[in-house]
Image (cartoon, rainbow, N blue to C red):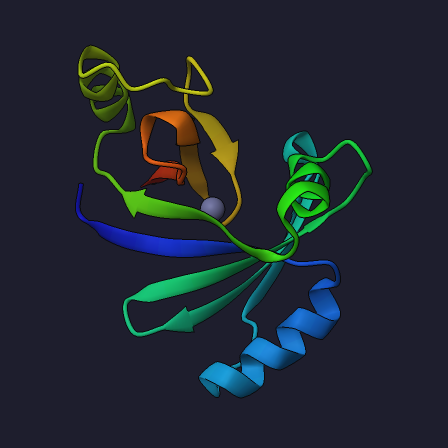
Length: 133
Ligand code: ZN
């Protein structure tokens, strides 16, 4: 894996959280994007070589809505950049990690993504992401 690509933060209100993180990082939200298949609206801010991804549920069944109901707002996942997502998925599967999807799927910010179950990673939801070229 190359680096931490972004940290995902579950929020109740994307607008409000965007304002706070713009002040915190002193940089504007550069992209707002809805991922319909995941039931999320996302906002991205850059920080050095990394990003912060704010996530708001776009429907009550969204995984983000369920996460916030259970744990409240806060860090939702850590995303690692990979060059070959299928190869990494195979490697992790062989190492005994539980993957939440069998095939890479389109995520926000022009990425193919796959999630690793928090049960396999000490309570942290892990995202693998590969830039779509
Ligand atoms: Zn993410």
